Amino acid sequence: MSILINLLFLLNVLVIFYFLFINSAYLFLSIASYFHIRKYKDIDRVFKMTGVYSTNLYKPVSIIAPAYNEEGSIINSVNSLLNIKYANFEVVVVNDGSKDNTLALMIDYFKLEKDERHRPKYVDHKPIKAIYRSDRYPKLIVVDKENGRKADALNAGINIASKDLICAVDSDSILEADVIIKMLRVFMEDESTIAVGGVIRVANGCTFKNREIVEVRLPKTYLGRIQAVEYLRAFLFGRVGWDYLNSLLIISGAFGIFDRKAVIRVGGYLHDTVGEDMELVLRLHDYHIKEKIPYRVRFIAEPVCWTEVPEDKKTLSVQRNRWHRGLADTMYRYKHMLFNPKYGRIGMVGMPFFLFAELLSPIIELFGYIFVIVSLWLGIINVWFATLFVIASIVFGMILSVFAVLLEELTTRRYQRISDVLMLVLFALLENIGFRQMHAWWRLKGLVDYLKGSKEWGEMVRKGIG
Image (cartoon, rainbow, N blue to C red; front, side):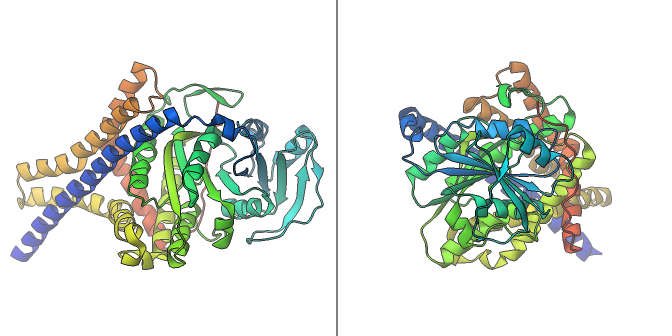
């Protein structure tokens, strides 16, 4: 019995140290992100080379947008992509076997005609039925193919694309007009750059006109506002911090720019995973380090992509389950990089952190709550010790979330209304009580589903932006 008591006490101590260490690491990333963002804002004040971007002196870009059953928004989405402020780009829309009128609407609206020219196949994907172009819209290419899910559609777009860089986006996301200009600055600063990610922000509640942001507001629902805080913390400060450490492991599938040849060299997007975005980035790291090719994978806080987030519990749980299965699958595929000095900061810092702070966190967090409750009930720990656990796990998390909101105000300041900022602070506090525990449960189920072999994408219910 004494052995069991000592074991429970030790587990409680380890859980407290876990929360203290992880939250301290997140605090460091937030602080590093703040100075990193300020540095780039200072550079931006003197790096106003708009003239360069308005010419053909720099790398052209192919924007690839997979589309599946998007008849309600496809015309507005494509128009918004065609209005990007950049001289040399094309838009490749890949109709991934839609069962609705997505393709027919595009053919009619954009006056598309079949293009019979042969296109070489560099990366694998499901068969292409037809390729369409338009004399009225020379920058637009529409690909009609058999359904193969998002990664397969992106691979088809990579083969059809003719530009040096590819920008992978979701067809229902909205890019700000100057987003390409801001992203390509990173490629100008360092020619070894092979991938760049930008900020994803919550579009729910915002006002759009002609697919352009007019007013930034918070979502009206509880889950929407919680995610607004999450996205601030994860994208604006978490990934900027990893960029500062040169250890970025993921670029969101909703928005990222890649060197096309680099992606083709590693075989394009992987088909049999639900975490194709992180998997591709880790494969790029793996390949370039093995081959000893100089490279950079970057993330910057200025370019913004607006996306709709799920506001009902069922859809959100499906999304987070899929995200965690994708993380587990990718970490397992590249386990040879974990704690491997050959991979530098990626193997010794980035991947270990993602293993313990992301992949295993739902297990440690949920069982930590159980350990504390059982130990307090059995008298193994006292109220003071339980209070210390609450401070380390919940209060510290609240501080981090509020800190992320305050840093947003000190740097980008997209939320102009004081009422929205105060509401963000409130939900930064509320996020850690109830939602965080529920989110951990969804991710734990995702881990179990991964072990069962599930590779289902799951249905995402969307109401549409604007």
